[in-house]
Length: 220
Ligand code: Z5A
Image 1 (cartoon, rainbow, N blue to C red):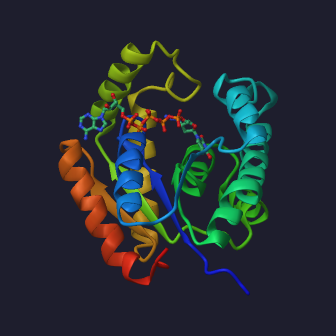
Image 2: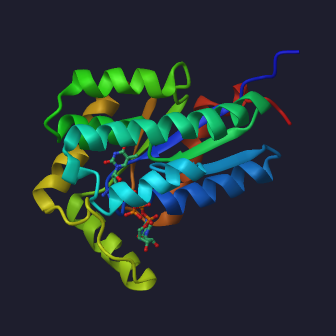
């Protein structure tokens, strides 16, 4: 019997937008409704992709040029999709992914030097037909995102990664890039004002997800 396909939800936005925070809350809420939920992230999510994540975020890939970095994001994604995301969707699970194709479109495409065509070609190869059903774009002003990311670093003691070293102008362009994608694909993307408190943001995310996906989701 062909398994019922699950639902694929991605969370996107600039640093400090609250993606990881909301992913945890959304997972708990869906599980309380009786759904199987697989929470994952990019770059990463599979053993090989996590190894690539460490290499890329340390800035090692960029030393070999922006094309090498783009190829590594694509290689990580192909492995992640094949080993984790597709099997989970085939079981009928909800897959919640912290960043996915739109991060590449924004950071490597719109803000990079490679052009949209290379990014689009590698996206097709890496994901095939496995596209998000819903993308939640968590939107915050870049300055607020930077403050929040700084607070999180203070708590965790993590060092600045290759992207966090970029300045405010870069992160403002990141925000504009995500908003532009959401305008281009309104049927897939929902923009959520994430500058508000986490409970309000959680409620709006739930309203978007349940309105767009839940009535059609497989009951487990
Ligand atoms: N990248 C790329 O270039 N190309 C690609 O294809 C992919 C990624 C997939 C990965 O970073 C980097 O890789 C990313 C793009 C690039 N770089 N940047 N910038 P990451 O995944 O390690 O980091 P991140 O996505 O930027 O995560 P983040 O900074 O942790 O942001 P977040 O997950 O959106 O936020 P958070 O951890 O949930 O919250 C941050 C802090 O704010 C924390 O202390 C929370 O308690 C607090 N918080 C959260 N929500 C709220 C609200 N609503 N109010 C107040 N405080 C809040």
